[in-house]
Amino acid sequence: MATQFDLKGRRAIVTGGARGIGRATAELFLKSGASVAIWDIDGAAGQAAASELSSLGKAVYVAVDQADLASVRRARDKTLEGLGGVDVLVNNAGIAGSNAAVADYDPAEWAQIININLVGAFHCCQVIAPDLVKNGWGRIANVASVAGKEGNPNASAYSASKAGVIALTKSLGKELAGTNVTANCLTPAAARTEIFDQMSDEHIAYMLSKIPMARFGTVEENAAMIAWMCSPEASFTTGAVFDTTGGRSTY
Ligand SMILES: NC(=O)c1ccc[n+]([C@@H]2O[C@H](COP(=O)([O-])OP(=O)(O)OC[C@H]3O[C@@H](n4cnc5c(N)ncnc54)[C@H](O)[C@@H]3O)[C@@H](O)[C@H]2O)c1
Image 1 (cartoon, rainbow, N blue to C red):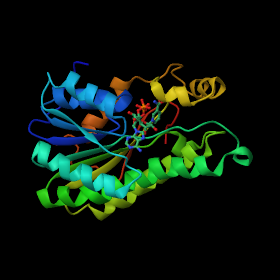
Image 2 (tube, rainbow, N blue to C red):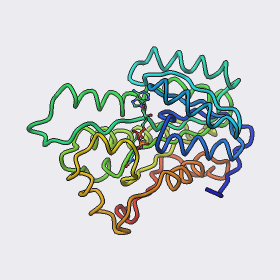
Image 3 (cartoon, rainbow, N blue to C red):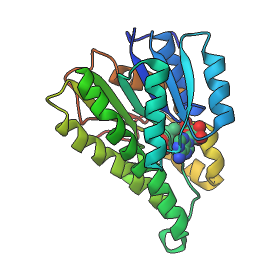
Image 4 (cartoon, helix red, strand yellow):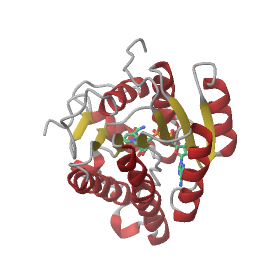
């Protein structure tokens, strides 16, 4: 990925930064001059990502379960110690969960998906947004999904959680509009990462069949859009939804 954005001196949190879209975002941020706190529930992969990326700039791993508010508060304190402050929050961590019709879905798993994807994103916004406002400048990028716009069959919890992330972003963008802190949202179509391991082959084929460009997105394409959303240039855009869907979503 040759593209670089001017993130010089910015201190960024990337949740779910151990792998996939989050890791590609952390890498692009570092190449663009930011320091990065990789927040992830997976300690081994998070530590490995931080040490592998540290040749590009300051990268630290911070343990967190974003479904747990107390854990998010601890991660925030550790990040302020490690980076000396925070300017950017990328809410990227999430799970897909398994594929089943609404009538058959395990209620406990349904609630867990909402709790990690939606309530977890809320926790991170609630804990970090006041720091950004205090700075007088900040960027929040929430990673939702095209599933939150369209509703994928056999993925109702995931789709509902991501629709919630879109609405959370719209509310937050308006709340912060007078503060120099923006909050925007990304809605990717499928990109081949380890998250595919949670899905059925039929579901993966369904997602591909819906993409007019007839291919999956790449983590680098998603990272590039996130980096732009977090750049100083994206100064008149808040509460907005950006697609990386190869033409699936044109609204
Ligand atoms: N890959 C896709 O096809 C696709 C499409 C649309 C949206 N998205 C969204 O993009 C984001 C990243 O997806 P990905 O494909 O890179 O996934 P991934 O599975 O490769 O990575 C997700 C990361 O989130 C972490 N995580 C999970 N639960 C957590 C928790 N409770 N607290 C902290 N960290 C946690 C995991 O350990 C993992 O490192 C997700 O929100 C996903 O829903 C992905």
